[in-house]
Image (cartoon, rainbow, N blue to C red; front, side, top):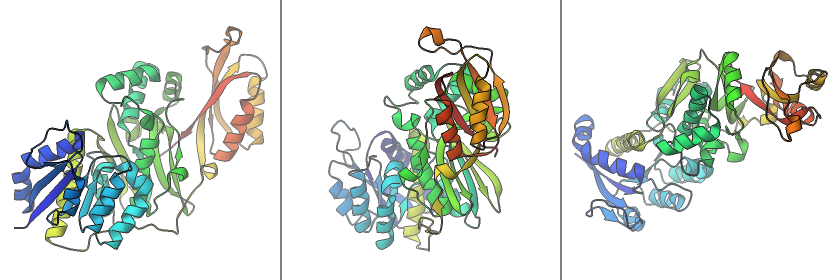
Length: 432
């Protein structure tokens, strides 16, 4: 029986979870797979790290240059030196497992090219969806499918915040503080709240599903900061929930890749994903609609995904076959610019309560070929500055499908009207 040696670089929350599970479940993994997986190194530069002294090293070079190490697990995060560590591991004839979504999203082209050059593999199940085995499902379970759509709730922090705002009617600042107190949100939550974390994961999902890894500047990215409790309430009245969705789908020979707050019909499963949970809806031409659901982060769910990759690679090393490779770019498909997408829109205007305002708004929308499906003036006031402007009221519209560029142009003109007292909020609608 071949022993597969693993070098772990990065002993933080996830790294310590991986080491603990490998130690605790070593016999179980051996029994189920027939493979003896041995953790040979734990590498971390932090002198405060407490780990098995027989395995601990501060020098990543020892791990990378040891010919006895078969698999390097990179869990330090960030771009540098993580990229250099992975490239060195590949060059030194070692396969790699990583949970580093930001690195793969921004530097994946170099890494996957190097893996191909040295005939090695890079596995990254834990980079998307935590413990949800979505990468393996797309690479293997959907191999005979043409995937047409992916809609994902893939950031637990934002989903928790929006769920709390929905359930309690609190504003985003209150929900964020609660998330931070529970350890659901980082002290600096900007990557989550701006949608960047979701965009990183969407790039990987797009590459797996469509053979296209968009660059970050090709993924439209809008966070949840503009969403107010009133928007969640109004959306619910119209039969929708608001979720931060990562969307990748085929559209007229191109790929849409976008992250933004989205109205989702209450009857759809995605609308009912609560708290820190993630869910990824995949539509294939053969399978139809499927949904993957589970914890998208956390020490042990993520460790479970890392170890699944280790075991897959260990099987490959022990009994070489021809692995499925879904990471080669497909130049035939291009990323569709956000200005060219078509969507229905929920729009909330903050307008003075006086005659003619609605006619002016409707006129601008009409000139931009945007048709109104419904309009309601809400019986409440919006606080504006100065106090003499406090008689602004919400006007909520739902449009028929419209071109994004025309919607943006219309909103720019509408927001310049003297009667509009706050920047208008526009959210896209997915019918699913």
